[in-house]
Length: 263
Image (cartoon, rainbow, N blue to C red):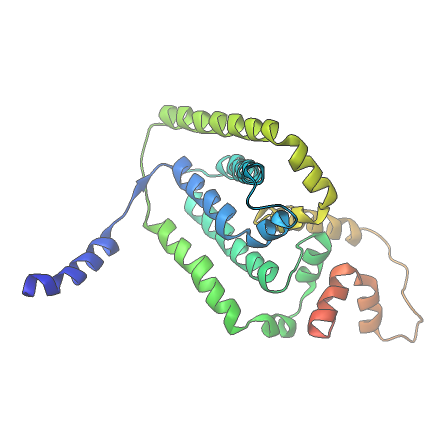
């Protein structure tokens, strides 16, 4: 009897002290698979709309789409994942993906450049209004749990020659799978993305990263441009500033929360 009672505690102790050993490439691969499955639910929901789930071609198309998304993310992130930087990099990506997946899932937000420009202009009061219990629970699950898993992993050491060979093999395999998936479903994939251009703004975390880079470059270009005044001289500065920054995502945020999104 005592041995039976001690089984749960032994199991918990074993799980707690378990630390899987993975190479940098394997850890990144697991991360991008998790991104594709759990952080892109709005993308899959909208992409599946209009398709018959009982037709084999539908599942073939979306299996290829899954491979394309996963391989593209893998090729991008593994190229940045040095052994000493892979865990901080993945932690940052999971933090971004957790925030983005929350707003795309619950509010239907499209993270395009306009949306990111408004995020960069959000002030403290507006940010506090977005910190809800639902967001905190979502972050605990979609950021806290994977982060703990990442930092529990032991990165297997290897010589730089083996590391280069291993990375080259993974990249070549990913490239081959990517090209094969595109070849098998090129017509379906191109038609889907051409007729639903907004879908690319739901691919997490790539939507945030690309839009952030474009938003920052846009702000840099705008900062070096002389702007003409908006509105009359007597118009309050806050109103003129809002009018200058008005765009699609501002209108959406105002509709959703009854206020503007600009700084």
